[in-house]
Each structure stands twice: as structure tokens, then as C-alpha cells.
Image 1 (cartoon, rainbow, N blue to C red):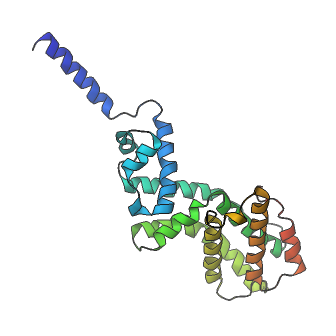
Image 2 (image 1 turned 60 degrees about the vertical axis):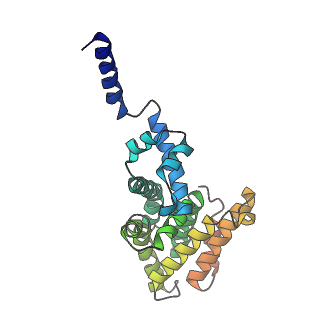
Image 3 (image 1 turned 180 degrees about the horizontal axis):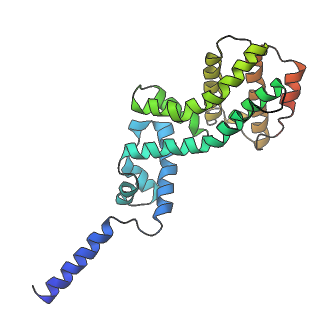
Length: 239
């Protein structure tokens, strides 16, 4: 083998050894792809998303997208886990209310407030769920397990407690949970369509508080002074 051939072979081996490694700044590229993908999956659905397009939007090579995620389904799973991680704080906060030293009206109002605030911060949560609820299968099962069940597990005991004490005016608290969670998620997610209710910021806060009032009134059937006072403590949805 000639010297020039030997040098070319070395260069080829170096290129091959680098092919499987992410380039400098790859972590940032991964997060950008994930951020774009979450929005696209939430708005277009699984079939409307293509890995190559997401890589282009993120300004990275398709090879880097394949390196991080390997497939569109793996990327979808990463988005699902991202939403689950974002929901954890809200789930824990609601779960802690069951044992809190508070009157029931304040517990219920706080639980709805936390859920509404979470949805207002992450509107893709409701849209992502909606896309998968239309098609039974593995993805739908995963969405229910990771995004819906955690909220159901912490809200159901609270709603059942209210029904037992006569505050919640229904015997089917599970139907109440699904009705209200879907209504809240989709109203807040539809900020493009309902922009007049969410801008400017002062109008957004009024809308979120009115939504809280509507949900509590719907659950209890009557808005007693105690519930009105509890809602009155929710002055800022950012805390």
C-alpha cells in the first residue's frame, strides 16, 4: 500500500469513528428538537410529524436527530416523558391537599387552581392528550398511564371526600373528573382561538380565575360563601 493510500485509509477511519458521535453543542440540538417535536405532536398528531423536518427546524443534521432519538416513536416517547416530568410538581401539590389542615372548600379550590395553572403554563398537555385519545392503541395507553392517571389518582380521593360530605353534587365523581379535566385542558389550550380571553396579561388572569369559579360552581352545584372566600384567596395564578 502506498503512503498516500495509507494516509487516506487513516482519514477514512477517523471519519468513521466520528460518525456516531454528536457534534459540539449536541445537547442543545437535542433539546431544540424535543421542544419543536412536542409542539408538533400536540398540534399535528403523530402522523403529521417527520423527523427530518424537525431536525431542519432545529438547525441540526438529520444524523444528529437519529443519534439522539433513533426513530419517530422514540422521539414521541421522549415528548411524553417530558410532559410527565412537567406535570409531577402539580400532581404532588394536589396530592398533598388530602392531608392538609384546611377546610374542604379551600382544598377543592386549591386543587382546581393548581390544575388550571399547570394547564396555562403547558397548554401542549391538553393538545397532546387530545391527539392520542382519537386512536386506541399503544400510544393512547401510554398517554393515559403517564399523563391522565397521575392527576386522576390525586383528584379522585378529594372529589370523593367532597361527595361524602355533601359538597360535591354528583355520585359519579369519575365522570366529574374527566369532564372537568378535559374542559380545563382544552379551554386553556385553545388560546389561539380564544385569544381575546388571554391577552393582555391582566385579562388572562381574570379568565383563569373565572374558569376556576365556573369549575367549582359546576362541581358543588351552589356557590356558598365559604367557596367564594376560598376562590377569593386565589389572586395570582403564577404562585
